[in-house]
Structure formats: structure tokens, C-alpha cells
Image 1 (cartoon, rainbow, N blue to C red):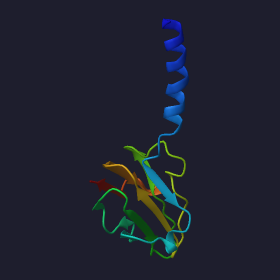
Image 2 (image 1 turned 30 degrees about the vertical axis):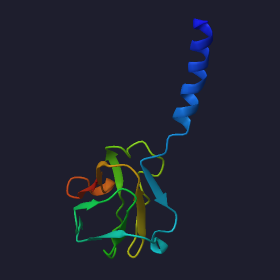
Image 3 (image 1 turned 45 degrees about the vertical axis):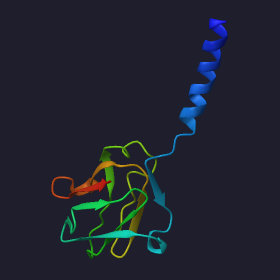
Image 4 (image 1 turned 30 degrees about the horizontal axis):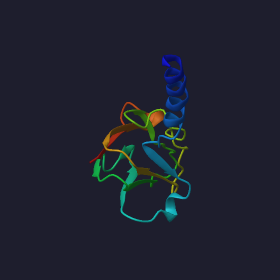
Length: 125
């Protein structure tokens, strides 16, 4: 009887874990994102709003306004660090990257090539 229960538990646990949702959702078309959006502009080697507080289910959109300098958004700490796409693409001037935050928490991020000076944080309540 114990072995049957253990076998059932071993089968059920991976299935439940596989169905767990990611804490963030990378939106494929950042410029067309809808709903409540917090916009963060990138310019002069900085995230112009380095800390954003939003509610669960809301979106943050980063737009690079800096001519001649590419930047990205890379979640290296917090709930999103292991999510595929959590290191966003390099954004040239006018390009955007948008993320919908599904779980409360603090999401720290950097611009990978400029990590010494470009840091930000999204706080999801």
C-alpha cells in the first residue's frame, strides 16, 4: 500500500510542477502591448525610471530612446531569473521590450553591457 501511494505521489508531483506558470510573460510585440502599462524609457546610459511599482498582471515596457547605443533588460535576480526570455534582446533606438508580471515580488534587472551603471527594479504588489 505504501509503495502504491509513493508511486502515485512521484507521478503527480512532476505533473503539478510542469503546470506551474512562469512569474513573467514576455510579450512578443512590445509596441502593441495593451492594458495597464508602465513605460520606462532608456536614455543617457540609464533607465529613466529605475524603480517601478505595479500590480500583479500589469505590464512594463522598456523603450530605448538613445541614438547609437543598444541596451537590454536582463532579469538576473528574483523570480524571473530563470525564465526563458528573461534576458531581453538588444534594443536599438526606438526598439521596445515588454513584460507582463504575473507574481508579486521584486524583480531586479540590469542592462547586460552596462551593468555597472544601468540597474533597475520592478516591484509587483
